[in-house]
Length: 275
Image (cartoon, rainbow, N blue to C red; front, side):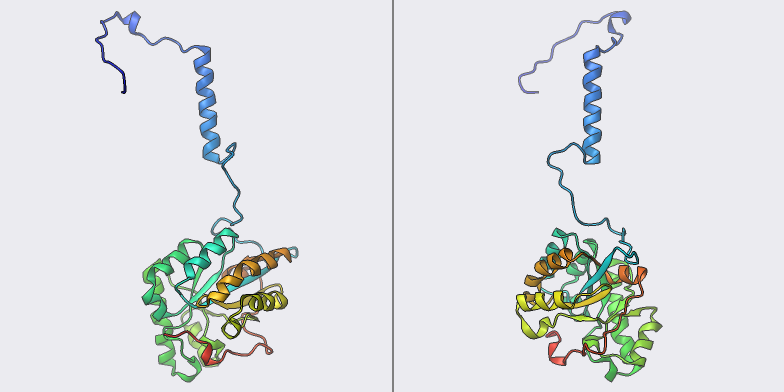
């Protein structure tokens, strides 16, 4: 309205006030504007538009295809202070991962649980207090699992389907209780040993050396050096032709071994988080 003035318009006859056909030039400009708007909505024809490497949420790759090498990156013991930084790294490279969370950490950082889920990653159960479940009674094991299931459901609206026993310590009793909840026990077959070295280059080198199709890689988002190693791990795996997926995506399309192999030992209890 800057600089404009209102003036009284004299009344006209119906013939004078009837809308006139638009000129050819006006119709052409309207068509161009409509086409441009459509292209912007579709993300085409814009110099600012940049492709993203992230697959749409729910669009899982077919890991059973002979031409696809899938591998699952997993992170234990969070949510941690730098989990959000890790999510940024994963998002920048279009990678989806699985986070096995501890109940006491969830209580400290419930917003991070929601953030992990909203970014398209998988939230899973890693017990309430990170004990050796093999030393507990069935009821105590049930309590460790059910508490975290309730916490996760409270934050993201649904119950996890995967459970990883702390330290990888399991037996028939632990596995049976996990299955009582309709959950799948998930361990690993590639161990980054990031709890031991606290050196980004060593962690990267170990993961890349041990990587194999349909593997489940164990890492911990509580260690800064692990987060520093992740960009090079992802780039190295991608260069070797791997597609990085969540554990559920891997299990849904392959018969991946969810248990650690005999040559990958359980973790020492000193490796656990400080709760």
